Image 1 (cartoon, each protein chain N blue to C red):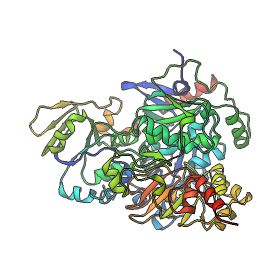
Image 2 (image 1 turned 30 degrees about the vertical axis):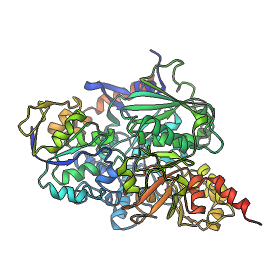
Image 3 (image 1 turned 60 degrees about the vertical axis):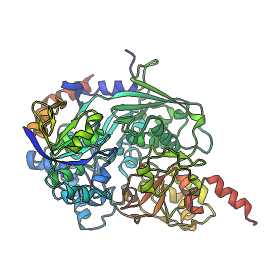
Image 4 (image 1 turned 180 degrees about the vertical axis):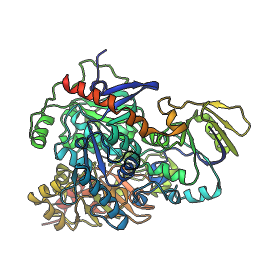
Length: 445
Length: 177
């Protein structure tokens, strides 16, 4: 049988087959952050003392609440910090940190063919480098730190081929939101998504990470993209080593459990109107007539409302989905020389991204526009710190989840690309970058 | 092992883990104390919990537990006494987290959900893999065979610990090849 890339990675990591289609899968790297790791650390210490399979196969960092916002989160950070020191585990403390899915590639910890897990659902981001990377719970993570394996049921593999070229105004974010809408919010459950096709190949590594990041939002176990010269060029800078990527490819004519083909040239910029990422519409369209009434009640919207007529209270650019340097450049291109009309927070994905943005003067662009330029954290995306929104308020956000209450109790979230968030911040309503440009042309100099 | 008792019927689709427990409560280093916050991410969640005191089985809609990997969602429902979740479909990580904590995930046909949601008492025979609404005929369901021992008796970390010599041998072989 001709094998997918996923099949090859899976089969090269099976330590033992188990009943029910399960296997003990070897994990090459465990990523541990301060919110979901302390519980597993304590469980290991209680039962097995200081045993770990291999501290060199763990990377730890502070990302969700950075720096600590209160005593409880300070204790979380300190638990991880002291454990990492005691166990001689690589640790990225505040000042050298960032969102885990941004830090791991940036610091050169990921290479094609790896299996990587983290107690964080967006771990699939790392699939952009031709890995099997997945989110897990705290107990499974403890198991992976103790014994370097996961018990996993082998997922089916769905090939998602995106043909043609994306239009100039269409981003990786628009593509993944369109994919989720196409296969359904739970349409990927039980699958690994293997993205291929010319439109995927054309994406930057940052764009590929965005597409893999949100595989979980279709319920998928993981998303992955076979490495190519672009991957190798990225990894040459981060790992400082040549990457052997040519073996990490699907066989020609590999067999898949399901194949979905999407015409890349037909994808349009989209914005969500509902309470899951699949509930989205073209930015030039309207809330659909058949929209789920429960979603609309929460969002305070009615069918037929033009997306661009929706007024917003806040804007946010950040998160593991869209906080990398190319995301910030795209936002800066919209904001340069303009002013935001609603409170706007811009949060870089890591200290490294922040410093790069500042070398390019992007922080001046943002701050001249009146946006708040923060340090890196996961904070606002999950309503945890640095920008929780008030009940009933509406935010356009470059994040990954528009669930009820996600960014703050009773808050309403519209997911979009960084450039759409930036344009919306300027106009105070959902807007495309072209709307901002048109406005500028209409105003006499 | 028999689980039997009153029902918490919230048979809505796509109840994500942010609704089960909002992220603002994920600030501890252990599993305790999460029950206080169970379902506080749903507008009517606390009222539903209060209206069904003593519930041991949560009847949910499809794609239950989607979203964040937070195991706190399972610790939260355990904290209000839930010992099993019945749904037509589980999101993968929540499903795994249920197994890891001995909360029995019960997958049944979507057509049966209204009946279970209306039941006064649900009885689950975990060892024999049947679920019963009131005095109806028991309905079979499946527990993943690789995880069933952990549901019945815990011991997940001990099991993996016992595998370490085998895993090290596997890794040495991989390094040599």
